[in-house]
Length: 207
Image 1 (cartoon, rainbow, N blue to C red):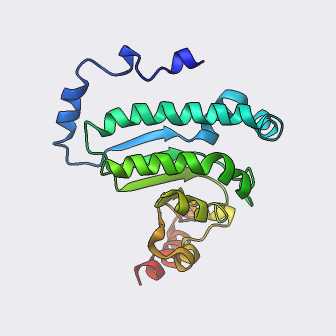
Image 2: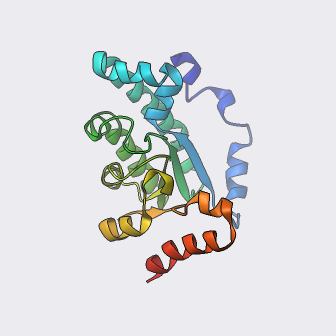
Image 3: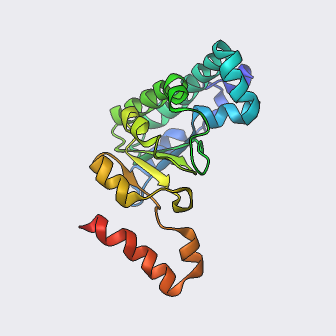
C-alpha cells in the first residue's frame, strides 16, 4: 500500500505542472482542491464497520494509517499550494447519520482533529482562505470541533437530518459559513413550497 502512495512518484504530476500552475494564476474562477479526509479514506481501505472495530481494538494501527494519510496528503497538497494560489480546500468526510456522528465526538477529537488542524494550518499558511468540510447527516455535534480545527465552511447541511443554518448562525456566529442548508425536498416540490423554504432561511441570515 505504502509503495502505491509515494507522493514523490514522478508520474504523479505532469511534466508541465509548473506551466499549468502559472496559467491557473491568471484564472477568473475559484480553484478548489478536493481531498479525502482521514475518516473517509480509512473507510475506503477497511470498510466502515471494520474501521469502527479497529478504532477500539487496534488503536495503534488506526493511528498509523491516519498518520500515513495525513503525511501523503500534506506532501501532495503542499506541492500544489507552493505553485498556485488556491481559493478553497474541500475535505470529504461524510461522517454523520441522521441524528448523530458516526463516531463519538471524543473519538473525532482523538483520531481526526489533529489531521484537520494540520491541513488547515498548511493551507492557510499558503494563502488559502476557505477550508470546507463535506458531510451529510446531522452535524450539530461536529461543527464546534471543525471550528476548533480551523475549518470555516461546511456543506451540504441537510435539513432532513435536523440541521438548521439559521440556528447555527445564532450559536456560532461568523466562525462557520455554510453551503446548502435549504431543504432539497422542498426544492423538488417546487412552487410555493420551495419559496417558503427559501424565505425561511435566507431573510434571517441576511438580517
